[in-house]
Image (cartoon, rainbow, N blue to C red; front, side, top):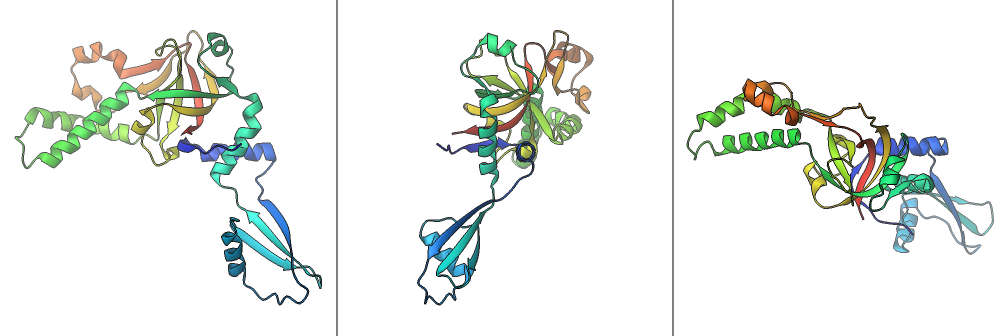
Length: 278
């Protein structure tokens, strides 16, 4: 039975690439239907009118080709269905479902057996790196201050922060992707057992990164890297251009851990294919 999904994130390029590899090229699905007709039927009807007739009968027709087979009384209507990204995702999901690792609840044994290249499917909540959130808060504050300049008292200290954070805010905003924390439902320790997912901004579907953090959603992903005991994977590097101007040396020393967010074992790095609600 098919399921309707509301995508928040969909990597269309990866879906098509995987599906093409499985099927050795994407093909159109062709359906052909014979419609009985009277021998004396004068077949002078446009394709547009045929489409209207079929659509009125409840048959969705993206493209239609019509041919008459010689002098017989049969008209063959050929319907070519162009695949949509939704239908391609459904097909890919059916292909890989037998090999999927379902993470229902949480099982430490299954977590320890995950392997590179494996597909995982799970319900999760998503949180954003502190460094990204700080950059966003600075940007929102700067925009609000500029908007309200005419009717609030001048704040020289805040204007200094705005000026000194400009490079940091611009560089954070220019990033093409953001690593996020994808935490499986039932994780016994959200600071240890989580996925790091690289979310490519162009793959977000009518939503923002912040929208991903509201409620739970289902995630289909592929494991990219199982972190070893000595591995330190950078989630977010807050030591971007100009951040050193926002604090003195003592502040930088105290906040060193927050400025450079890293993931360590047993966290797992994944490539998200889709994040959706259903």
